[in-house]
Image 1 (cartoon, rainbow, N blue to C red):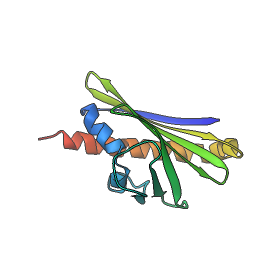
Image 2 (cartoon, rainbow, N blue to C red):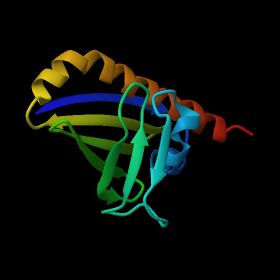
Image 3 (tube, rainbow, N blue to C red):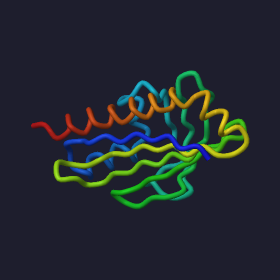
Length: 143
């Protein structure tokens, strides 16, 4: 398994950052790394819920929620070309707001090669997404 992770401190309430992390339909407005997200059904974030996610330069992928720990952790996964990607969104309170950690765990046939070839790009994607969450959350707390 190959793991790629990025954490960022955000000067906003954990609940604000949690709301951004768990509303992927808004992500295209927050980051250029996501083109579109469409849930397959209506309702709250829950285990088993799936969405189609389109990212620039990639084919659309079906992501299925596997874990929800309210206000703390949201995990979903997709399998493309035999590689399973598990994406974890963690929100940990700090004295000045929270720390938002985005992690990708790659497994399956080709995961090592994909991690080696795309590791830098995936780290940049996580960094860009985390910065988008930070800008949106800190902007939401102003005023």
